[in-house]
Image 1 (cartoon, rainbow, N blue to C red):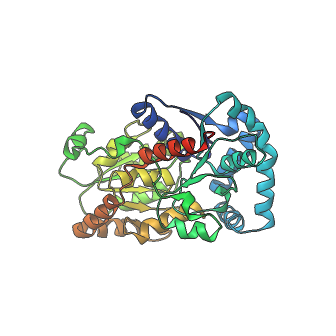
Image 2: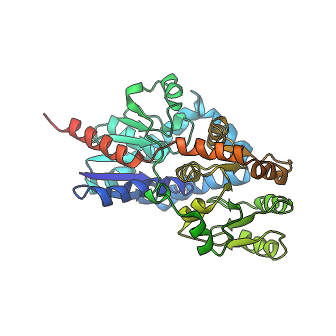
Length: 375
């Protein structure tokens, strides 16, 4: 079985979900092959930059406008119709990529890509099953298409919302957002803390800036390290030179022991070693943290999908919210001092078990392929 996984680089989450599925198939199903392709790049640099750079600029520079557009396109409206026509217009440019791959099934991990493949199925140019993998904790109409064969969603609470949007219940599968198996693997926390040069007897707070990187997280750091309860901090800035430089200055004079990390391929180990994760609520970062059973403190949710993610976490006692203008240090202090509450949050994260997501997605894909065979 050949599976084509089509994605796009609007943030790192779509790519990470795609790689998680691909890696699982490579490791567990020798008879199948998965190919991950950035659909926007395969069509051309102009479309890739228009879609991806446009998303980055709106989300970072004009989040309120992004939120308005998000809400406007999540209901039947002229703008939603315009986006649908836009994806239809470009869909034929994606057809050579699909034809060259000759897949038995297509998995789409980006809404615009899902719409394009749905259009190609409507015209009969693509006849294989289309599985759409939604990478956030609330639904949006941009993901929906008349010719999607199955939707894999993060949680069961999305089912009635999607039914209200016209999606048949039998097409919705709450398998969870796929993440790498390393996030589900149990780890020796004290050993990891020692490995990272940290104190195994002190709580550890992990701060992650997100795939875009943000600057006001520096202010959150400066607030929390002024609290007088003992803990240590790890800050992962990612490949954000400006943020790393700013933190380098702040860490030198910090009253709390802080390990500053520019880039790492051991995110799962830092999560396993932490007692609390402070982060923006991107869909994949949230899913990786939940797989590690790490409570979250979320900030700067982009209006739209990140707000949906944050609300899901707050509703299910998996996170606290660091409000703009509030005393973040006091919020973190009250949480670290209340071991019972922190353990309840950790238990809530652990109970949200989606460790079989990649297995279930592969099984679903295989079943759809079998049903699609002639005769």
